[in-house]
Image 1 (cartoon, rainbow, N blue to C red):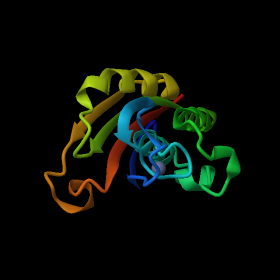
Image 2: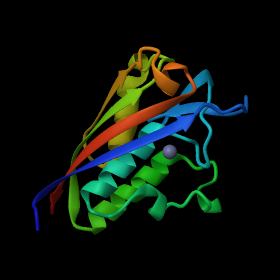
Image 3: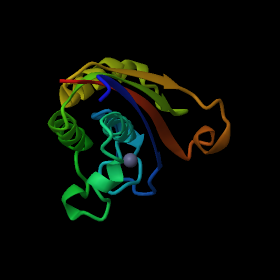
Length: 159
Ligand SMILES: [Zn+2]
């Protein structure tokens, strides 16, 4: 059994046509910005982090743990979902080493909210989480501002 394991996570959500949807990234509400479509609150950053943690612990993917047909997670706060994932990772015998995230989006600017995102995500995960943001430079669906994507890596250690 390896003492240290890594996992990768990826998620993407399109922007919603529903003007009531609020953009939530890493648990932070971006007031006045178009929201993302999804079954839960569509927090693409929390979902990518959760997927990476599950992968690192060898627990499969997010969809198998929290199916998007489950009414319990409709409109759900994805930080709560991320916390539930962290509990399952701990139950499998792993502690979170760290999680690193790259959000890919054209707008809005993440930098002013980065520390708050890191604080909320770290609290949910029980370990250090770092957030970076990059633009798609106008290329592809993300570049055309059709949605937001996020990549994640997570490291866990046997307890
Ligand atoms: Zn998602």
